[in-house]
Image 1 (cartoon, rainbow, N blue to C red):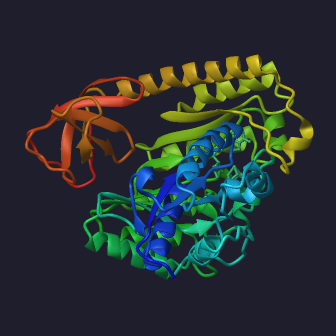
Image 2: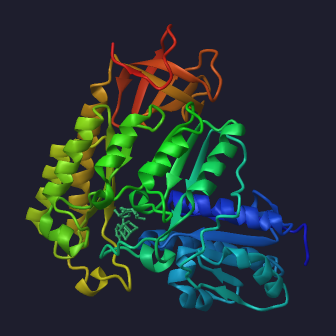
Length: 447
Ligand code: SAM
Ligand code: SF4
């Protein structure tokens, strides 16, 4: 096999894709390829894709145009589309033009070196079989040393929400063994990482046959009590009392839950196949708030799902009022072929979807601001992550509850835990200065 050739990779989409790219890096390095950060020096160009919404696919298709252009002046370059879009629109990709050499779905990354070799010989490589067993358990993701790591603990999804393409692009749910995840966290701890985020489409349903997600959280948190443990995404149906108690039981399991609700209307929730009602969701939120009073909650909301009426939309706004999330990721419904909702059409006009989305965003921004204002005067513990976006004289870092904090540099180093007294806020960021006294590890003090 030809070695020492360089490859360039771009990643689109969610954290799961970022984690997958680290697996791909490991496979490519193992086969002797060397990563380059610039397209213009690449022998192999890979794009790890997202298929969740049409706008993601359109951006990727646009970028493929640039790769086509690059290949015209460098005809020996191999171009590969990998990940969810490769799985979903394999045929269309191949028809996009002769410049695409490889189309490889999320469960077939191990074939990359072999298919690159075949592509060198002029063959097109398609590998898009979904697996019930592939977990890449034996592959250590390639990570450069740093503060935070993503750890993929499971793959696929069995929930089949009516709007969602993930079960079709990533296949059925399967969990890695607890032992392999714990050993990855041990390795991160030895290398000085300060934070690990456990990833899955629905981490709450993690099961390796013996252990559930609460068991896993305890084991992972106990590896290094100074390492923050985060996790996402949670599905309301599988958020057990045991899991809530477990989050509360360890200081280093962060007080932050991303709990997508999608809609506040029971009628829409049922059509979405979300398997809970508005009341069940609200009861769950109340249980969480009772057991973990400091909890920070974020959610996902879709606006303009088929048949959504003004009344359904108002119910979503009401729910946002009632829960008072710390933040929300908001999306316009995007029809996806093969999903159940695809057959329902896309009957909410674009201007109405836009207006509803705008109302959701405005409301949530006000709620986030109100929530953040309650923190003025508090002293919070921050993990120093790096320079702030706006000034070389400022650092930024996050609280245990995942809030971004910006503060003047004051002799601290990246990776330090420091106490910051919050002085002003906006809806997305807290601003403050370092307190004189040191904080007990992972405390949130209200002064
Ligand atoms: N597994 C997670 C969950 O249960 O919510 C999230 C997975 S999905 C990649 C992230 C978010 O994208 C979803 O929570 C949903 O709000 C949004 N989403 C998924 N399919 C969508 C679609 N067809 N149109 C608009 N938004 C969508
Ligand atoms: Fe998609 Fe629903 Fe699975 Fe999340 S839980 S990945 S929204 S099918």
